[in-house]
Image (cartoon, rainbow, N blue to C red; front, side, top):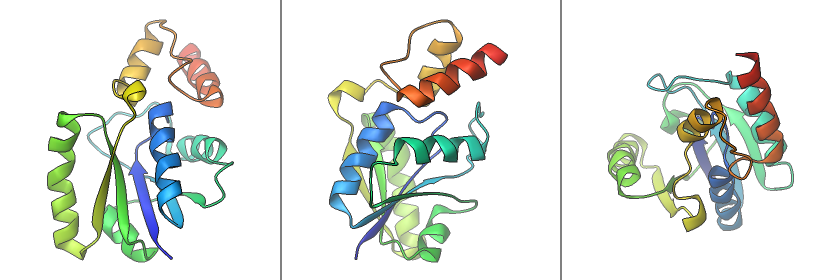
Length: 159
């Protein structure tokens, strides 16, 4: 059985994330969607809220589980016996950012990183951009799952 981990901050989860998750779930026997802590990013949703949103939007995928982690993703992969890390790439900037991490992860534990290119319709979508546009009153309903959109609107309205 091949198990892969699709890590991310998912703050919030977007339709682009969900596209990568669905496609990775079709490739691997088991996919663990894992949300961790990235100190270089500010958060709108706390870890438990992000896990709840991920569980909700992945509920129809029988071979997908959602988990949180702290520390290095390669340690998490070792702990759950995952053979690969799945990362989505929107373009060259993502590749430039992800390649050294993939190489370091392989160096540390031998876990391989599989890159899936984002579908063209989601190539411009990022959690950061979704949050920025939504905070300024823009309509992001087509960019996030409906349940996530509701939470996003409620959080931004609460200030």
